[in-house]
Length: 175
Image 1 (cartoon, rainbow, N blue to C red):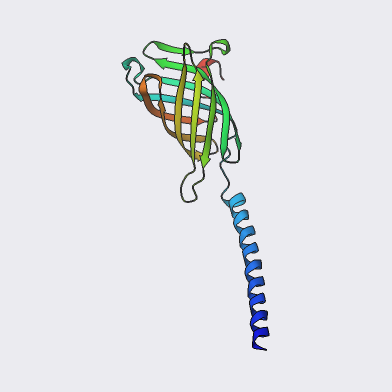
Image 2: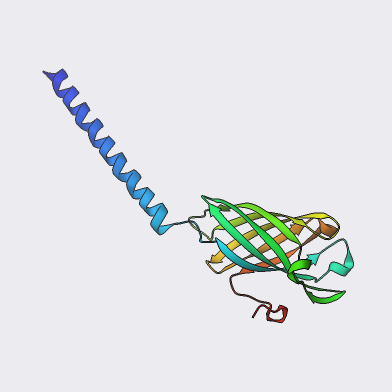
């Protein structure tokens, strides 16, 4: 009789643990999808890079402006970029469509539950005369803004970068 009671209690405990685990799993999935979703970064972005350090002094304090089209699958990011604007020691210029350099974006989103989410992007740009590589480490401020830093293999540059949804270059015919 005691073995039967023990077996019955064991089965009840096993069943209760299984049901509790299922409820907890559904609840945590709901939290992840509805309360803590990945940031909405798909779509069009405009970003400006400002060089702080470089091995080539004419690039110091240079500002470059790009437009990017991004899409996200899970936490993976892909997309394209085009250089639209430059303000450097050689002057300020806007690039027309036929003169823009293009690049390919690959990266990922790192979900942070107790601070801002991070985005890491690697861009390979087919520049004038050679291919170049840029790496961005961004903090997601909102669905409309990301800020952070970049490093580039072009003249060993690094600096600040700001990504935004709004068009910042009215002077480039982007009103």
